Length: 329
Image 1 (cartoon, rainbow, N blue to C red):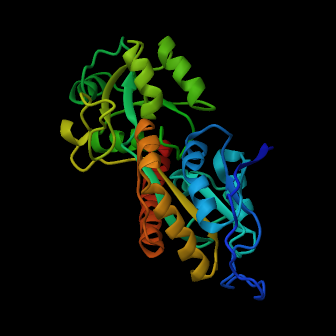
Image 2: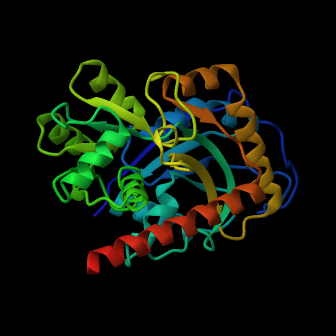
């Protein structure tokens, strides 16, 4: 069962006079000739929606058509993603989602699509500075080395919030466990909100959570931040070092947000969408909005993004193999 929510973010002030008198084919220079729909395979109000709210007005003005956002949630994002994979590759419907696009299928045998082969890769739009590793104040660790030492001295005692296999709460935790040879138990939750509530209540010990959520609870003293999972610090939490800085060399796991079309989309359309994203994320007001969300705009070229997605998918598959092998022991 899934929920679908549809709304119009913006309508361009005036449509550009593209393609008048030309045949309406997917590769026609007159594209787009009708409103564009962006499918977000998660509930309204999450990070993808916040990003789209910042960039779609710019893109709508550039492309000369209104852009409609449809939240088609369900099965950790697989419902909406599978829906887009089966649509015509005419540029009329886009998919905008997170790193879960490649991270969730390796953990779920019910995935009906290949995140690499079944899509045209348009561009990366934004990424964060990593998840914040936060712990309940009762956990006797002020930094990552102390946390690792405690976990090794008490195998199986520490627990972490898993808001869904393949999510940004799950992948960093499993990478850390592998790198440090620690036994930390995964506790499944239906979402970030539920996991955060239990962490604050002390029913679970640690959580890799978005910086925007972590910051408010760290500032109130309800949680303690030990690290960020990205390659560099975030100015919103300047005193919180990265995992790499604390001895886990090469550790870099960030949540990223990208745009796809169904497989086989014409290069002319793909390049125009990519250019519109690149232009939007470079605007000063968009950069300012991203900054408050702990994000940075990154507009990759389609071929670069395709390589990036393939690499991320291979990494997720390897992590899934390790997790599944460990579960069988």
